[in-house]
Amino acid sequence: MSPLKLFCFSVLLCFLGVATLAAQEKPYFVTYTQDLEEPGNLEIETKTAIARPDASNRFAATALEFEYGLRAWWTTELYLDGQTTAADSTIFTGFRIENRLRPLNSEHIINPVLYVEYENITGADKTIIEVVGHDGQSDLATPNAEARKEHQHEAELKLLLSSNLRHWNISENFIAEKKLRHAPWEFGYAIAAARPIRAAYGPRECTFCAERFILGVESYGGLGNTDSLTLHDTSHYVGPTAQWQLPGGIRLTFEPAFGLTDSSLNRLYRVGVAYEFEHFGRRFKKEAQ
Amino acid sequence: MKISLASALRPVLFAALRFTFLVMLLVSSSALAAQNAANIAAGKRLYHEHCEQCHRPEARGDGAKRPALRDDTIGVISDADLEKFIRNGDRRKGMPSWSGLPLEQRQQLIAYLRSLK
Image (cartoon, rainbow over all chains, first blue to last red):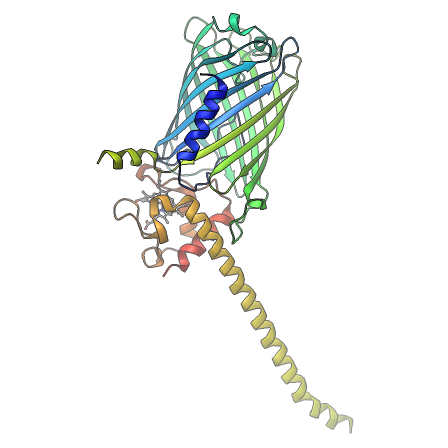
C-alpha cells in the first residue's frame, strides 16, 4: 500500500470515531515516554519524515501506527511503513510489532519501561523511527528498486526512562538493535523534554488556548555497534517540537530536526497526525452480543 | 478643643476601618469563589477528556471494576492522598497513572470531583 493510501485509510478510520479524547502524549517522534495507552483504547497515528539526502532526491516516508492498550501496564503496537521518493517510486517498506511494558506499579522519579520490537522491513525503509549504529544519509540514497531487495528481520530492545515532573516530561531511551542473522548489535539513543505552554486548564472549551499546545525539544542518534563502538560516522539530530491538541481528540505534531554530523541529513521534517478511539475492544464485544 | 475633636472622630475612624475590612473580605471571598468555580469547570472538562470513559458520566462508576468517584465515596480521602493516587494510578487493577498531566490539572480534577454531591 502506498503511503498516500495508508494516510487516506487512517484519516477514514479517524472519522469513524465518536469519542472526544485527549491523551497524555508528548510531541516526540523517536523518544518514548512512560505514558502507555489507556487500556482498551486504540490510537491511530501517522508519522511522516520528509528529507533530502545530499546524493539523492527528496522523500516522504510514513509510518502508520496502531497503538492499543491491552492492560494499564502493557501497550502493543503495529507499524506499517511506506515511502515515496521523488523521481523514483512509491513503495510499502514493511512492518514492525512492538510491546511496551511497565514493570513497576507506581510512579517514581525515573520510571523504566521495557520495549521489545520485531521488524520486518526492507532496505528502502526511510521512516527513521530510530537512528542506531552507523545509520547515515547515504543509506537513504539508494534507489528504491535496489534497496527494497534487502530484507531486514530485526529484533530491537529499548530501555525507556522517563520522568514526569510538575509540568515537564523528560525522557531518555537507550536502543539496542540486532539483525536476526549474524550481525553486530547496534546502539542508539533518544532524549527529549516537553511541557504545555499553560499547565492549568481553562474553564471553557477552546481551540487555540495555551493549554492545548505542548512545546519541547528532541535529540537522537547512533552510538555505533559491537564491532565499532565509536561515534565516528554516526548521525545525530536535534530540533524543537510542537504539538497542538485539537478539541475532538486530534493531535498534530511538527518537528524540524537538524543534522549535527556529516553523516546526518541536513534537515529532517516530521509531521504527525493522531487520533484516539476510546474502548475500541469493547465495541467489538458489544457488537458480538 | 483638640482632644474632643479626636475623641469625636475615633468612632468614625473605627467604623470606616470596619467597613473597609468587610469590603476586603467580601471581595477576596468572592474572588476565591470565582476561582474555585473556574477550577471546577476546568476539572469537568478534564474529567470528560480523560476519566469519563471508565468512571462514567458524573463519576457514577460502571457498577463493576471502575468505582464511583463522587464525594460521598471518596470523601474520607484527603486532597493530597487523592492527588497521589491519581498521579500513581493502580496499573495492576486497571487504573492508569495520570502523572503525565500537570499537577494543576490533577488539582482541577479533584476540585471537580469534590463538587459532585
